Length: 186
Image 1 (cartoon, helix red, strand yellow):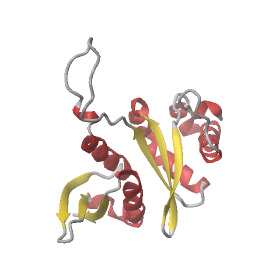
Image 2: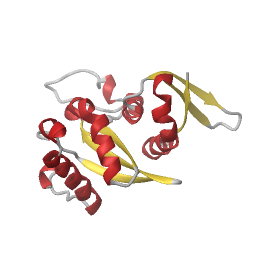
Image 3: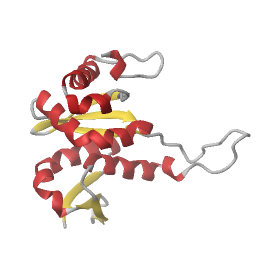
């Protein structure tokens, strides 16, 4: 079970993270179709987010392993949702945000990478949340009172599968980025 979760040195996993890692390990051992792909994969963190009527489980994976997780994400999410009694499971890559004052070492000169800016990381989190559905468009609606709502237009081909999850997606994105978002279908 400890092999499926790896934390930074000196940080211990809590009970919930250990239970998620244990379920992933059980899936690897019991499922023939998931055994080979899950063998080298591990998670870095897991957290439970309250979405009003139901709960969502956010699983953080290393950025380098995100592509491998995406290959099996639909099957893995389906199995984990069965195990955690219908809670929506979201897999998000662990990304780093570098501040505006980021200074590189003398060996590597240059600006901070665009992929490490706040907006790029928040856009990537949004992509991770709605995966495998594609985002077809985004609009920011500025209201008179000064609040902003990000309208995200999703592909209508997945509408039947995703429609019940959009409230969970919105609350998880709000919890992670502190931005209000609403999902619509084209």
